[in-house]
Length: 284
Ligand code: KIV
Image (cartoon, rainbow, N blue to C red):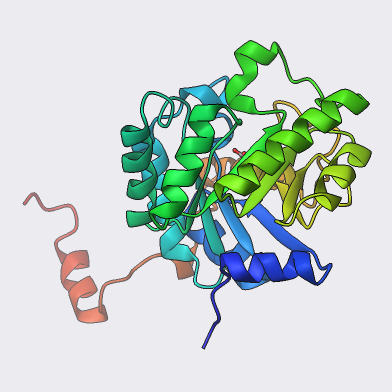
């Protein structure tokens, strides 16, 4: 029997000083392979807005679109804990709609939701979701849904004061009930200080080595998304080249009669074939 990863498993990693792995996943097969590989957390990230749907930021993806991908990932994973991003503006307008949308992600297969920021409203959302049985992962530092107010892909927490400010936000999220917090694009000393002063696990997304978890966008680490590569991404594969080479070879084979080959076609039984040969050329 496979033991499913839970919020308790992730907390144990933190308590025991161990690490957990997290990758984004958007489709059934990838979720299945990551699950089989032992990845602990699958994030249906709103990064899919850019890497899957080709929008120019994460703010464009809708609840409906996020739901389709969450369902697909849930069908593929048995062991991994599934976190679904709540998309931009799906949890900001009212507490009620935030709860409805968070609940909908759980009903569609997620085990938790992730939301960005730390305003009073966000803290209320975290509190109400947690009270309702919906685990919430926070997201601080660089928060892509705030791209237009931040003004660019800028590193956050670059000073003592801003490190303290992020720690204060993280503590508020923890108090509100968040089970974990992603720290994105902050110096590792900042992430280390924050992690050391929290009881819940932190997850580094370009925040260095001292968080309990590490997360990467899978299309970045697999070398599939190639529009840009942040400094903190390590490429573990070159899927762009694999896909390009395969597509070029296929194009060549089709155009030169090399695909399909004998063993890639269905054939008629011999007696049927004979009849067909006899009537070949005759009009039907
Ligand atoms: O949407 C996403 O993929 C994320 C990660 C970068 C943490 O939020």
